[in-house]
Image (cartoon, rainbow over all chains, first blue to last red; front, side):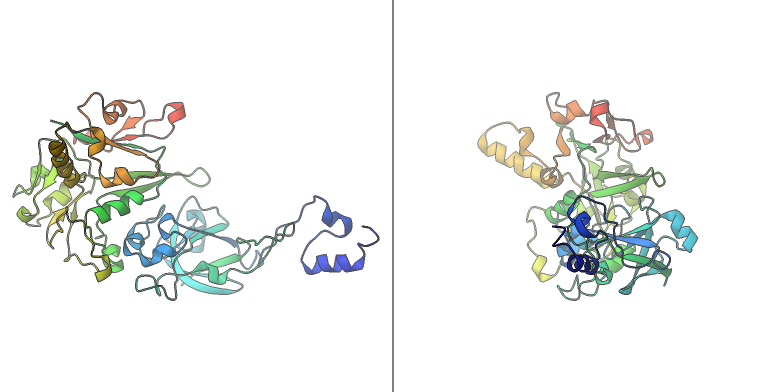
Length: 172
Length: 233
């Protein structure tokens, strides 16, 4: 292995963004997580989730499912982004304010809802709205956080890192 | 005469809202649309309340499904000027829609906010018009609320008469109780000592909403924590 693992393998590892080099890359080791966006510019992690009534975005075409208030903030017929109340206060955001959610890949506008369960450096946003088609009840309603998620993988197995994108919030 | 009641186990409720959707479909409840829903006019005969307690990092969210409490001392029937809402002899707080004049005294009197006024003529798109034929569609200007799926009781009574037998616990079950995927809801006759609800209503985990108001609601809740005997809400 040592004879074969020379420069070409290390170059490949570097290209893949893997921190380990040489034999270490093939043994159990720690790979630091990689994020898209610098913390100083984009202070929040964007956590996306699927509410039960949205059923992974299929519920958007059903009026009853759109109207059922979503836990825990009770939003109906629209998207929202959950922000920790103390952090929101520092940013001058009150419950219901429209905010820009921006990552290095793009931005969109949605309503901020205060939720104490949100970690101070994480904002949570549901998937399932922001359809460009899919019928009269779904089309053009709400925002789709997936549009500003970047592509990143974990350095050990190469799995897609869904929550690697950092964002910033600003009042709209 | 039976006294119909419900017990909801909050340990088992996951807040999935299947009960809310099943109820709306069973009872021909219209959807309000985004503008009317924004004004708080969306009708939910059963609603899942998300109660958030505490501050980060000690936060707890509780899901509490809240149908009509079917009170034994209902504030809504006391204020109705026309007798459009009344308590029948099986303990159900019933409604006669043609008698309702839409004054909304009952809506204001109910401390649980389970009564809803029809601010507009209920409308459904063509694709959603396969209604439940057993339930009347309400016109604009009347108040409506959860009936514990009273139409299912009517059908069950007719069925057991044909079969020549007594009504059993499994014959009459409201749509929400039937739908619940975790079996968190129980329904039955509170005055029947052999029924599940009569037994659960006496558990140490049991509480009711706003008990100090004296409305005597017939919806009981089992608070979370079955393994440590629950805690009082």
